Image (cartoon, rainbow, N blue to C red):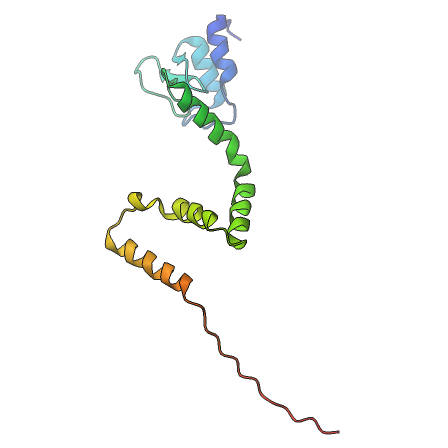
Length: 154
């Protein structure tokens, strides 16, 4: 094994052996970094990998590091990553609120489904379709049942 400087080893340690590196195997990528045929640099989560001779990006490379993103945006991104695990619970809570007849939950549901009123896209067809749906929700469903009488003989 070729010795490498600690900075280069840091990038090698961040590589994912199960990742698809295109025509190269994981071992070939590691060897390329060690020999200098592949340049590894800081990435967002995984190192950025480039062919040293051509400068072309190697498949499986990490995305560039995020610049000076606002703290609020970083917090929102982190929240969304963590909240993803709770989507099933949140959806069930939303539907439960709707079934209890609370119109606030209906509003949230429809805004998530089709967007807020000012965000609707697609012109009149979507608007007309939503009007039909809303009218159908307001109209009670009429059902007819036919009951046949049977005679019972002792």
